[in-house]
Image 1 (spheres, protein in one colour):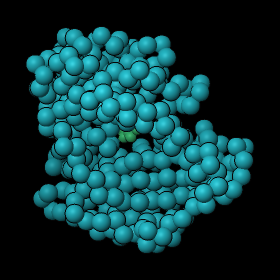
Image 2: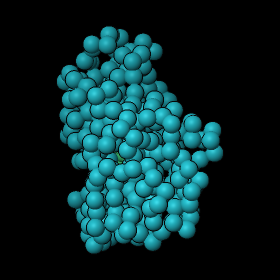
Image 3: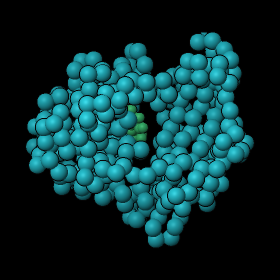
Length: 303
Ligand SMILES: Cc1ncc(COP(=O)(O)O)c(C=O)c1O
């Protein structure tokens, strides 16, 4: 597998292993950083790479920096060019996972708003081993972070402390992944992915005020599902709806689209990935990789 050998730090391409921050920088001391995880997919026909929904990811990053009150953040055109450049420089021969991150790089206080530094990195990342067979999920006893405490709408690095605790608990309890409930006891999302369920043939996902990250993949699935003629609802979801759903799946840039085949050890449907999940998984695969001509606006070529 290819290796990441070059990272772009504050506009400079440098050896991956040489990127540095001070341990007392505000980014390290208080976790003041915002990031995006993206993927560059390889088209099997011509070997070209394209970054999936780059514009939407960078728009969310700008929103995150606004909420964090970052001073003089890097502009979208600068980051857009850096993402394409870091993929090109690392010359992957398989799909790449891309991280764009902005952080407070100097020493400071909790009230610091700059100076803002940034990186763009491209890393190898294999598809989940359970992509085809599905995941066993457990509903976590950790509660999803709330908008009035640590807004989950922004992809702040510190938010992942909560996801990490839920994931560690899930692994300790023998599950593949965790599903989290909001403080109101409604289904929110997985530790790093959004959740969908099929109930009476209707595709349902928690709404944007269910303390979710406003996921790019969730939006993609909503579009693909509507195009496939499915009825889609965004609404509050109860925990026990997960137990009685015909199908459940999670989706996100990192996880892509993967079936949940059991929740709290109760099988979902017949305990295997269902037909709607498989149909959407195939549609997602085609649109990210460019083996369909649909939605060219979602794929930014890397030249
Ligand atoms: C907490 C959380 N929810 C949802 C998602 C999915 O978001 P996206 O589809 O934009 O990658 C992620 C992705 O990393 C995430 O970390």
